[in-house]
Length: 121
Image (cartoon, rainbow, N blue to C red):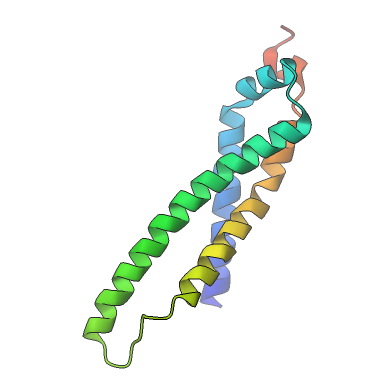
């Protein structure tokens, strides 16, 4: 149950961060659209940005988790931190979850109304 709550918080946090990033870059994306960027290109731009951020965060998190697990295995009897698959499974789950959570902000960015964002310019 604790893991399910943590995954839900991860998805909600990723959605919030991506929504804020898209909102902060509305004018830039509107200008890209005015210069001929397609909706699929805008969608790809936002999803790739999220993938880079998520990969950096997951890399740091997995590194920290590995370090802490090694330190705990030295102090606790019966605790084995050597299997790699849990780290990989959680990393892939978090990466997939962040990509799923960023689809709504990415679609919103791809469908920006130029007149509304640029103020009739």
